[in-house]
Length: 506
Figure 1 (cartoon, rainbow, N blue to C red):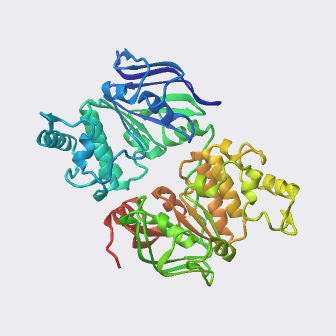
Figure 2 (spheres, rainbow, N blue to C red):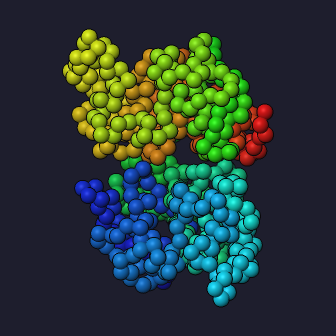
Figure 3 (cartoon, rainbow, N blue to C red):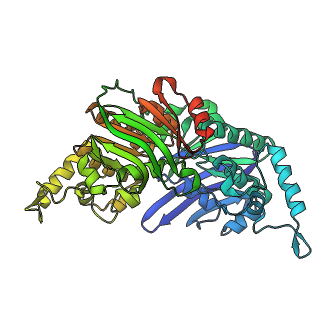
């Protein structure tokens, strides 16, 4: 008889009127790696937060190692051997690796912290699982991959036998992802049980023993890895065939529409400062920007779009110097922008779909008369046309965007930006936080934009996306361009090595 490290049965969870998890069941066999996959909003992260005690369940039961649990809290979950590594790491940047690991669970020698014992215990984990962590460095001095390993050691030191990893490879290079998988296999060999939440089906097929698919808050099916493939999994997730490998159209290259010359900007942190970068985007091509998240991509885009001050250098859009000009001036010069955070910069979530679709043009004809008399009929007619063209669901122009899923909210942003007459489209993390069906749609749209002779600057942490859509690829590391490659010469291996290489200031 199989021994279950975790058994969840008939789980129900509501957030107000939203049915986040519906009669869902999930089990984890001791010593296996079990992936939990699904579209954005399918309920997979919520299921695991219920197991970790971050939310109370509304109905159903949870058993850990055969013991039926009462109300769970993170403290109780930890005491019963559950550990969770979140997408956003729970580390203190100014403390050392060792200090972060023992924080709140410090070994004592009388009234003092026993740092010798702590160091010995941490080194045991490093050696046993081949973690490769520098315990005396501060968190802000180590890589993202190393920070993730610190999180794993931290939960192991608290006694975790079941480890939940929520989208763990989203911030890793391919090389770092392979290192993580090596560690996970070492943990499995030592008898640990692992729940792997991911949307990357190739990784799921690589690392899993079993795979559970969720769709619309329900568990659809649990399958053994050897009995399925990525295509079948995507179909279970979405309910139809999905084709993410969009065939890249041949670029009809025109003149440069964007020229960035020796650009310097400030950064949110030291490694994200932009340090003298130069590149261009030509009409009718997609230039992808690859890099580990936080290496200057956001700062670069903000400088181009007028949201961050340029310290040195120049930015030219279709022959017009837009350096340190207002966002309104830059848009009028021919730039549209799909921002990386649709909620803070892409949408007014308390406004309707129609209002969001015309927000940049509401005082122009035909949406207003004399610049101040709003024509709701014209707005609604235009909005319904875009909703149909870009498959926004539900197709209701009057509905507030706060009620839309991540994928459909993103489609509203995309529809507004690509429908405008433009010379350059900046698509920043266009697939972040959306499901595979919406990803397929947005990738097709970007190809269509390119075919209209518009230059596209695609910024994405998803190497597969950059490789499938781009004609040229700019690699950014620590605020420097470390390479520019035609897509024919690029692959995940050489891009990953370049992303890790770093670069000194010019």
